Length: 175
Image (cartoon, rainbow, N blue to C red; front, side):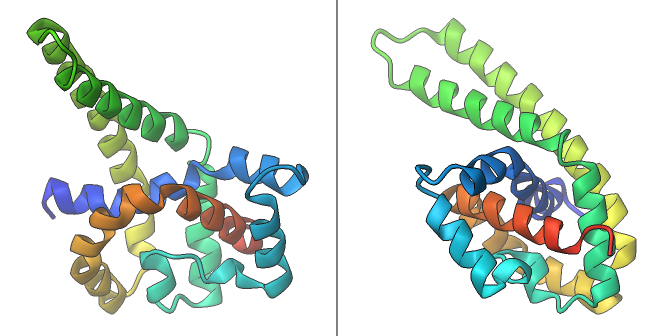
């Protein structure tokens, strides 16, 4: 599998796992903008229907539990890597638009972004290596077909995906 494809699939799962602290805060704090949405999700029982590739795979209850346990095991390791990568990319973009041009700073930001992406991709590959054996051949093929859509929508939907994955993990882990 190409690195970009691995990144696309894995980033979805990993970025979603980064949501847990925000989910806990939003669930407990009625002033948080996500609080009403989380309450609605809990009330409607939508925890198994989070946006993303896993929701389209028609996982069995056993598979859901196994995947949720894998994701839960990496929940504390992945969010800092996702955040570091996004922060590095944002810094890189900021420097490109600064005036006057500072090529040395841009080059340093690019090195930092590459290092952050490397850590994220390795972490993603570890998770994917644990999830892949849980899936059937057909489910792995479905993920392969979905790869282009996964990466395109990731950044735009990251906060919502994180919230929904946290709910899904909580509903399915340890069954």
